[in-house]
Length: 195
Length: 372
Image (cartoon, rainbow over all chains, first blue to last red; front, side, top):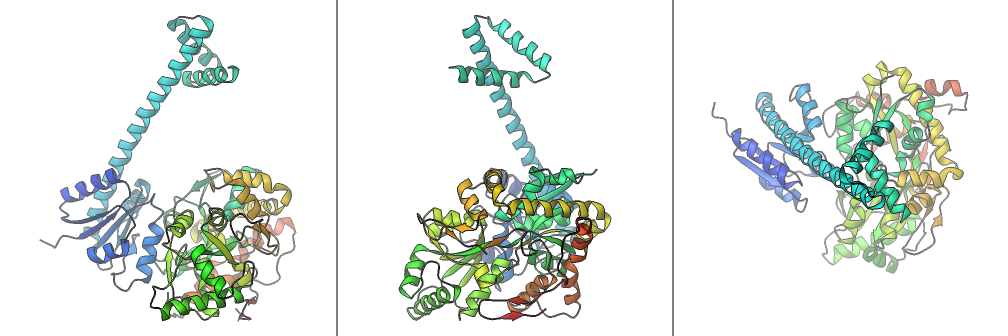
């Protein structure tokens, strides 16, 4: 019991996600967390932080840069990409699926790493869900705008009222087995071409 | 049939993968292939190993390193198909080029001339107490790293002592050069052309001038997957082989450049890609691209054959640059990573002429010879 807190380095260019993960790790009892958002002076930051565990988001092309630093540097303990012999395969799958890569220095007990990895994965997933919700909301908004524009065009060009314009779009969509927003896009596109 | 997921990195040598799918060569073999664009070689490797990808566009040395367990944990990968030969270039920043020119370098000159000029620049910087030059490459276990190191060492520059080598992802190289983070780099097309086009550097050598018919990427997969899905793998190799022939035919270059230029594949200007496909490289901004017929081979000269001598050369470079210690069983592991036997088996129905041997003698610009 009372093992010293693991030192964690988090490399993530996305500030919101980094914040979510940092908070989650603190809640899980990790106190020593360094967050790096830009690659500038990364080597120096790694040396200073002397981490036991490094997390990096998998969207980050600089992951290859990080791996080379482990290769060449004599001044950092050499962490290795996390694989089956440090955590169970399921955890690794979950990590890659959620978009987080982990590096761990040798000699850490498997159970300690696994708890931290699972925390990271669950917070990456939280972020992914938030992002999806936001994307869906933006998409819904954009689709509503297209339908509004198509209705406006039909009302102006054909003299329909709003209900008639919507009904025309809906009937066309049903007949052609398409979504209303797709029909609306064609209307907007066609109107643009005919101008 | 189960879908085959293949990861790739935005580089010109993913052409055969893209054409295999877009031109229907995989469909003709009854395969359902999904290409997934990735952002780093480390991701490609990890997703291949955990089974997110069934196969991947892979750095040849990375397949060897993974099978040996250097750089990360051991995970046996195999390379049954080569995605062409050559295609890399070394680019110097404009300030470095100006210094090299003063020391005897000339646009289009051979690797000896350019290398000697570079060596004099390196020496004079050391004498003046200036920081060593920094060169970018794409990954520690890459042909780019080894080819750059070979050339530097051959002209008297110690790549570990006299210069600094750093990893920078290909799409960022031109920017890194513009902001003077690096003085030179070695990368596959179209990223040298992109830097030249942006006016930040000049191409000083092609790696095929350093090592004619030098190896590059492969299609890699887990050894276990290859064993469990032999029929699918064979069909994939046939589709890729036909795609490589299609890619090399100049009549298809306009279509191929258009295909690759799309953001979901390489995402670079179509005219730069088309020039590179036709082995025409702009050496300096604004100049007419120069024809370099032996720059890149997509199918000719058995360019898709996975030569075991290539794998052995990579291993020799891992030892040379102290990435790995000598171990008795390693040679066998290295030999078994490149799999010409699978290539031969897959292409047997096509009744084409294949190399008689699985290895060949490799020859370099400085008269160095590698006898496997």
